[in-house]
Image 1 (cartoon, rainbow, N blue to C red):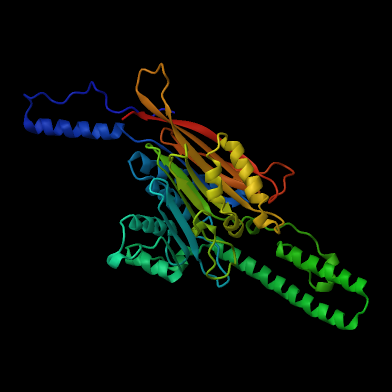
Image 2 (cartoon, helix red, strand yellow):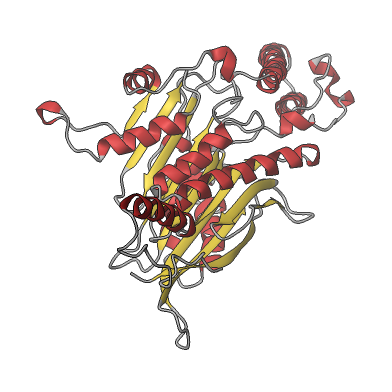
Length: 461
């Protein structure tokens, strides 16, 4: 991919004999032409969650990813910071009613929205995050503001500026720094409210079955002495509880479990998506990453997931003495699984290997699915998008003195699917894709991985 060329050396300013007013007008026109031609380069990769993406809503998922890519590229072309570009992408994703971030997020047990978000700058290595935040339309904007304020240095009396705020404190800080609040009824969509009501009914049914199970077990323990029969009924009741937790139709009675039909979950129930995120690299090779999430459905109030936690939700790090590649990572999936494996940072470190594809595959297999910290889990659910970049010399026979930025980008997931979009500043439009596990693969136990490579060229300094 080749960037648009800058102003040609053949363009001339007006002669000295020209009138001053004419010279000013011509100079202004030239400046406008120059700024138009010298659009800066960059690359962005976004995701709309690792989970389940139904075919019926594939168009909506892809469309929001396209818009997010375009917003980020517009920022990069205008010379904005990588952190501002990645924030612009996430604001677009948060504003979509089809994603579980910002507006339309999952509701907690009390029917309220609490969001997590974080951002990391690969150049300064600064980090900003919010957790369990309510009343703010775009949580990633607060995270980015925390990062920016932290770069200004210490507060009055030598106090250390915060990089991570939660709950009411995060809300008050945001409002105090000029970020507008948002009424709860605006944040909740008809999709999120309908999902909350369905999930609430399932929870109540599951709790009733569990209560009946405990009571029945106590009665059997006091009246039955035959161990074999007790074990059989206990096993049957556990089966009923498991099926209901998975979203199957509940039995009318605990003792009618054997007549239970294993109906598939509703499309929207299985399609509860998690975190959205983005990674970018600008024309100078600076990287940034961000992530935003509404968290698990029916989560306990105050719960904070990986999207807000350092090294778990996102990671960005420019090339350094012992790190030949700049890397950026954003994760998605079950927050508790991603937190206990610190997956974002693990992936970033693995990408310093020569073969990025193999390094990411091994990390997902050994550090995530096969992690000893998740040994008790039946299925490990998550996904990542990653990019790494490095400077390359221009071709020896090239007549122009140019530097090339080689960008490798990948996505990987253990969930049924993951929706991604990507775009460079030289592309006319973003590309989108819904990655799915291959036929026969088991979610939580299998890994899918895809990606590509692009070259970004810019005039040498």
